[in-house]
Amino acid sequence: DSGVTQTPKHLITATGQRVTLRCSPRSGDLSVYWYQQSLDQGLQFLIQYYNGEERAKGNILERFSAQQFPDLHSELNLSSLELGDSALYFCASSEWGQAYEQYFGPGTRLTVT
Amino acid sequence: LAKTTQPISMDSYEGQEVNITCSHNNIATNDYITWYQQFPSQGPRFIIQGYKTKVTNEVASLFIPADRKSSTLSLPRVSLSDTAVYYCLVGETGGFKTIFGAGTRLFVKA
Picture 1 (spheres, rainbow over the protein chains, first blue to last red):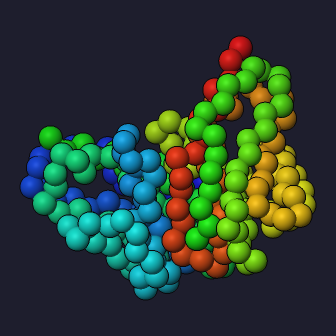
Picture 2: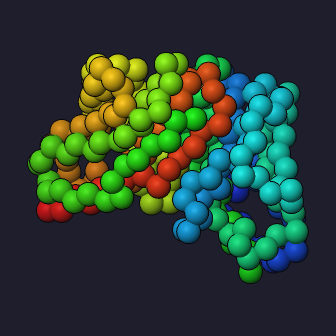
């Protein structure tokens, strides 16, 4: 158990819909990262937050957005969903200054039908 | 961010030592080398991190030559449960973007 929690575990929705994925980092970790992993794309870095502020963006679509709240939990919002958005979405957290020692949650499996 | 190159896949047998090498020719002075393990449908798990020479923990060893242009993850006496994808990452520990490459698929056979 990494200490990072993600909800829901599974999500099935239709094209065009909007969903919110939630992540709670390990106790004490201020940095949160979001990744998307699909079969043909590998593990793709989406976005990183540190203590409520966005710090880095990767291959995140404009239809996707995220935020980190004062209690440090983070949410990833996916809108106008397309079939190609079906993937595993992972959240990870780390201590400040330890960006490469990340602890990953169990992931949310999103299926868009 | 330094680019990394790893073998796409490797096969081994139970009880053998497995060495996975990662090339990172343009590694910067402040970059660290980090390895992760990922099982299917699970998030990656941090294995080991190092800067130079050798680092060992209860799971693996990491060998880094003096020029730091490559690194080798060594898994002693692998078991079937070590079948997974292993990722090599290179970057500053205070950095932000973490780029996972394709990794190395290790398949351990009985």
